[in-house]
Image (tube, rainbow, N blue to C red; front, side, top):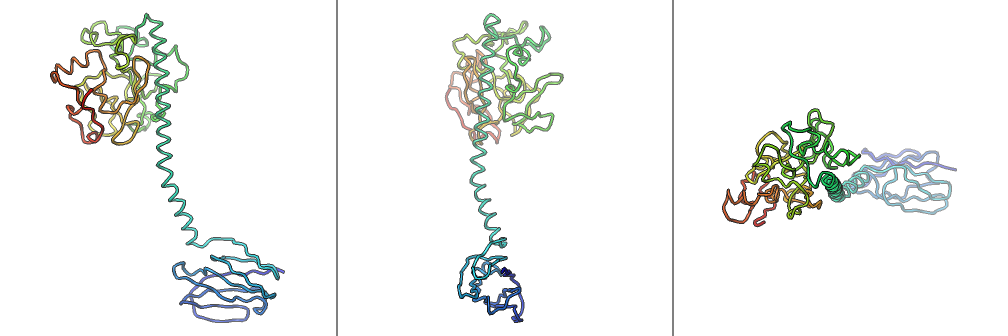
Length: 354
């Protein structure tokens, strides 16, 4: 034969009715309902209350007709017991117990989330490096098919734009089929579609391509009518300083023609604009964390490197980088502390000598 013992905490006056029992302790009332049984056959022996746990009993001692007794910890909202055998089945939680479980889960999440976020960012950076490394190999194939040289700069309408550094996705199109590699995994959403810098991709009006990488225009094979530009161009991957000359970088526009005198972005989340300070286009805190932000850069020897934001002013974007620096600052070591950094970049790593 089955019966139910239901414990409901309540506040009220002590009272006693047949087959109904109310037990008062420490000013709190536990309201116990015995359905269908004489209290002589099943008696509530004691209820232990605790103010800190609210109005719910912590322990309940019950004896049945055979004289056996059992002690259970924590509050049972509903207990079902067969005749002569003490069995209890928990069918719910108290509010305090539920809050404790939620607090434990929240604590575990607060411990795990930073680690998971860091792992996700590291994975995105590794995939970004892989994409750029593939582009390095594609540029080698291109150069080998074109007499060892890269395309000319373009942008002036002198040749078909599809064969220029200015529109590099088109120039390399015959060498790859997967367009996903021209997007950094950390910057997939277009700025025009609501992407937030530095995690936004660019698109040029009328272009069929979206990307989050920036080509170094100085790597190209010069320009027909620009001697200043021609003197500084790398032209080919087969040069002695190929390991120090950038080819492709994380960025927020398709191309960059930088100078050491270029000003850095004025604020975090800067999006490119037409200006003479084109190093702003690659100074994007896309990878790493504050203090050690960096971009991934592939070089003319098809190697990959993490380049910290301030370090971008020291790598040899063109052949006369050091000479132009000396013309401006004299015969002194190249030093990132010579640049007037905005507040958001001042805590980034400096590079005194390069």
